[in-house]
Length: 60
Image (tube, rainbow, N blue to C red; front, top):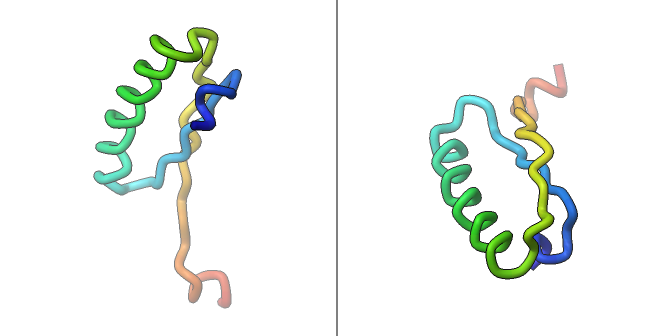
């Protein structure tokens, strides 16, 4: 798992997506377990808010 070797991590979050917010909770639980068991020095950087546009929006 990449988190066991990482020093820091960044979390991309899709804007306006409830599933993305739910996923953050799951990720935080995973990170806490990795920090406890394998990598206590792992540090959070930030949430990176993504605003994705459909393909048609890029063509215009």
